[in-house]
Image 1 (cartoon, rainbow, N blue to C red):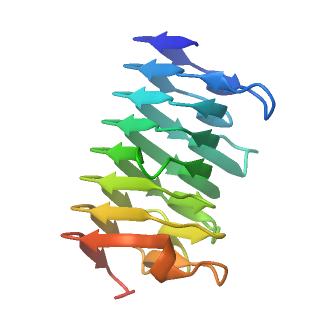
Image 2: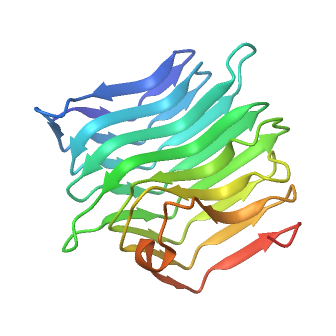
Length: 212
């Protein structure tokens, strides 16, 4: 168990980097109330953890010259009932960007991961098609509730949310999602079976200047 609470972290490669492994996972890491900015690669990287709590953090990223891919948050193999709530992520970008990258972030049916009341905003002008607020890869049993997500940086062919890989039982309830550059609010790869991947989608507001 590691706790990172109420820190100000500036000018690092990753603001917070907590890396477990597949045979010995970390348990119940808590990352609460931190302000992270001026990072080179990513604000927050957490790998191989169960029951992580990531709440009330403020992550401000500006894409450095020479760094073509940048992440606000990168969660890798997180399971067991994670809380990701009340976080503010603002990325000012020129290239590849992921506001939040969820790689095999999987809850359990009796305790889905809760992703709620987060704000994820991309600004600037990205020349890349990989300009995404939220990337979900093999992500299952996640509840996305009351989030506000806006992409001002991407152009046509980019997304607010992109889903890829086999996944199931994800719910999207009462979220606000907007793409202001002519791209997609939600796009799925051919590997995604939408009827299985999205268990429910209700009371969401979608807006795209390109009507996609």
